[in-house]
Image (cartoon, rainbow, N blue to C red; front, side, top):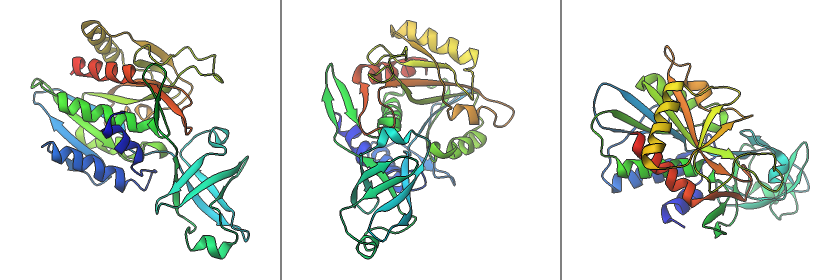
Length: 313
């Protein structure tokens, strides 16, 4: 597995506590001599190229997580979720608090309870306080036909793709703003602020979309069969101009596309309404078991997404 992706996966980045992954991305860009700036919302932005038209390519750097709301006398920690996900998908998972303390989700019905292996509130309170946040944690490995299994691939894989696009950037005919946005899992706050300030002509969100798995056989999206154009979700219909641009780019790059009509929402659904309206679309990497500790993606799909967006630029 690529060391850069491993570093991104390991970097703590629960929404609202994104300093570790933000600093990792900043240091990587600086080491590779890319100029960047950080705005007041905590977004990292890299501007490349020139020309009249502006394109914003955006991926949020934060992840879903948990926040402590109560510690019982017997040492069991009650937590709420940060971001939107199905609690049953994280049942019995391991989590890591920002200070490194490890725990296990012991129950996940209407409430989330976590056990860190201590026996009373006094002992637990020396490690964890109310208001502390935690992230999913687990092994990462390569399986099958070069598929990656890991927690937090959404949306670390989007950040990885943006970093690779920056390395490959050569065009001088368009201004491209690569945005690693903050607080994507809790309302796309950073992406909206970036769009308002940049005022792009086109915006493309890079993320993941649920693929067919053993418990979701009704999905018509498969890993290993190419990047996805999210044609529509509950908050956005992809702008026809962007759809046409991406389809032309896929033909030139000889990349197979998949198409999705999603039951979810996206950052694009929020930021396309900024200013007087922004032409917006989303390109996704297929992901099995999304928002679990065993998310699965295909390396080939990641590579093809990079090729697609490089051709588009």
